[in-house]
Figure 1 (spheres, rainbow, N blue to C red):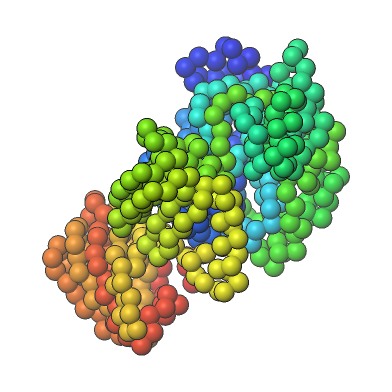
Figure 2 (tube, rainbow, N blue to C red):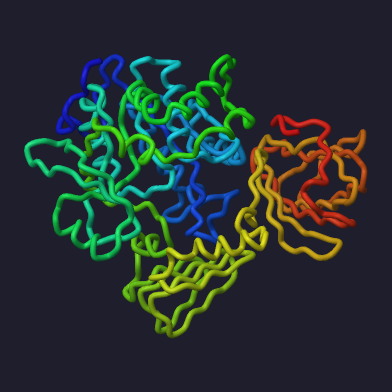
Length: 489
């Protein structure tokens, strides 16, 4: 396989693309982002949130390799419950060519990357893959791509290449890579990987100039990685081959749960990178942040003259160096410094900035009490659009529903509730029993309990409506689907 030209030859984002030299992006979407609760939850994790700018972190990750001759279509590995969310994100980004692998349960990054590499090899036995987490913030896209290009020759020669971020401060929230700092080469030999250190060790690492932050971004031949997994984690390779072999591959591909649940849960650092002697690291000199906490988000965000980042409907008085965010309601803060305040529809977080890493302990406490706030999100994503609960009582619930242009809900009925739909904007095509109606703005229709029905948007703009449910049981599991365009049971 011919090598790519040196990054100095890259101008204006145009990369040379010799025959058979393209890279397959592998985007990992398995993170839950518990330390960014209450915005990030298991059903709507941080990579799909618009935390900085209008695009989600996932969309920004896809955008780094979009419309660039260096890259093939992406392989995305994600949890099965995020399928329709990812498809909507990719549609918004304007991407149709990608392969989506859906894991039935989380088994960490070694199995995820193994599945992606086996998938890449089905199409190209010489495939080189670029593994990227979907929830990182990278400041300079051009510098990032230049650095990736610098790792191509090493990856093509059979080395495992990782990218380490040049540290700007002693950071205890990141892992580190200890490397041989040789000024005569771009890629450096890795001495060891280091877990998150205490502050004294972090200060020593930064001052030595022999340590980089571990970014979790990798470049290597798919076959090289599979050989390493075969040596260090053969059971993972066996399970991954079992779930892919003898299948007619059709994407999105849902991984068999009964087989995959037996796969060991191992990170790529522990499973492969820390054990291999063929690892090189290339320093990445651009703004990078894994947004692993609210303090990290404050650090990356634009701030006012008082060092505050204020998002949404917020008024602050005598407040400094704080991150304050409102998702809807007015939030006011007086006389506090170095705090995190985050308001969502159903929860409020107040924390000191220095303790923001401990938000995960709140999530653990909520999980131990079986509270839904750790997994369900006020804004629920569906393949046809979204719905959001506005109000709820003992025998009623009010929802705001958005149906995408050209989309439709399943043909369904409910045993325990009736529904009243009021169209706010757009036009609704409604099936009610054997009849069909068009319902226009400021009009409404009533669906009695037990009557089959369907809601459709035949227009070119989103359909917005208010749904009022009433009945003895209002749970989402009181849906009997009689027909569905999305293959749901």
